[in-house]
Length: 183
Image (cartoon, rainbow, N blue to C red; front, side):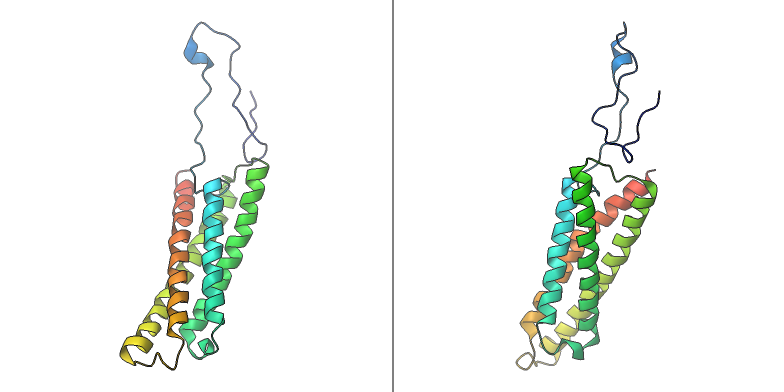
């Protein structure tokens, strides 16, 4: 019996193997692993992607709204990492919307590998940028005491948004990695 794979054609229900048998267990369809909420192609995954985009865009826009962020390399790095994360999350949110609307599973090995690598790279970049920006913000605020001349509130807010973005990116990476490793 040929059964369509969910990554090629939508599958609503797995067909039974027999029309009617004496044994009730013979009519039970095979058990299939369902998509866990938070994985790509699910409503939970879409919610994670949208929150990643929102927090990355917030970090990017808050940091870019200051006029002296280009003078510090860590802040420039935060703008670049948040911009890449916002772009990656926006593209994958569109893919998730498409997968939800046409009821396609995104559990293809190659697609899942691409999502896992992309999530791993972007989450590492955002985390490193947030840590570097936090270090510079602490240096400016606590050690140098020159918050009056700088935009410390904007720097701290953008850094906080970057950390929250990383917190929402990490579950996407871990769920995709777990799904890829369990194949």
